[in-house]
Length: 307
Image (cartoon, rainbow, N blue to C red):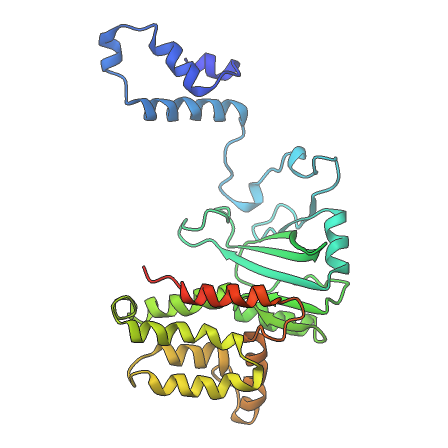
């Protein structure tokens, strides 16, 4: 069976079925169950098609030529810092970079490898940055960046996008402000809703959120602040805050991480910093936000995960 799977182009199911049909009933009874058998045969095929062993360190990664170019034979691996432990890989194509350079709006997302729970990020890397841009009324991925650790990406781009949307990773926001001081910076609404719900879990409020409808509505009203005009965000937050039980920490998370300035910011800068944070939170003033998208944002708040 192992030789057949290496040399044949038949499906795994066909190869296993053919092999099983040729052995005795006694031999069949000693075989593993069908799914495990197919899985083992599939692994044999994968090993034969990819004879290189998986790398154990970043400096030992060997990238085959076919994975460095596109289907049209254009460069895809645009940057490789070399065979070092702190190896950085950037994937993009010339057309994608042109789209990025000319885009009115770009979006930056970060995926983090954490104990194998995020399958998008390869095990040897800590972060995957993906940069998306608007193109022909669509949002398309244009750059993929693999980073070995949680540190700033010291690559200075030669373009100045008018609008940038990010998640709420503080280091990313600070770096973007430094690199693109003239860009309009805003936060991703989906990640805002995620962060609020994650705070519910982190502060031990999940059961209360699931069982208490009034408390659940108060929590869902927090990301709804992003749907208000900027001047109305802080006064409305103060109204919501007054409805929370004094011991609840969720309001402190929103105030400390999204609306108020970072811990350690001088009081003299607090008002200015608060205004900046509020603008990042707000989506009402986005030039690309349509009424339909605002309605969908409201729907997302209403259906905010309660499981």
